[in-house]
Amino acid sequence: MKRWITLLMAGVLTLVVSACGGGDSPEKINGMGPADIPLKYVNARVQGDDKTLGDLIASDTSHLGLKPKNPPQHPEYEVKTYELTQWKFDDNTYYYLMEFMNPARDNILDRQDFKIIKTKEGWKKEQYGETTDFDAIVSKLTESKKVLRELNEK
Image (cartoon, rainbow, N blue to C red):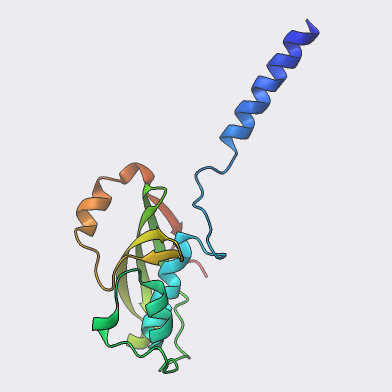
């Protein structure tokens, strides 16, 4: 009887640990997870921070004419009001939609979509600009959709 209770407790403990183990959270690289990239990227765009933009993009950015040695053009701009929605494709690929009040455009509601991929250097936006077929892809990932932050949160 004592063995049976011990085995039962071990089984329950295993179930609890596997259910709460956080296996659904993306790995952080250099202290950043994939959900950290959209806000950093959008802030770099509105601030005109070419160095940060270049650091956050995985593809070749030489054709963009970024000037990473120049300081940010508008460091006073900061996105504070935004909604961030995440879709998980796999452990190395996440899609995000960020809708935000753009301080560089008199707080007009803007949106930016993202395909964030895991690289050796960390999580990065796959390419500059819009994500090809974003709406079609995320429409197939509805089970993994999570709203990480609401637009009205502070």
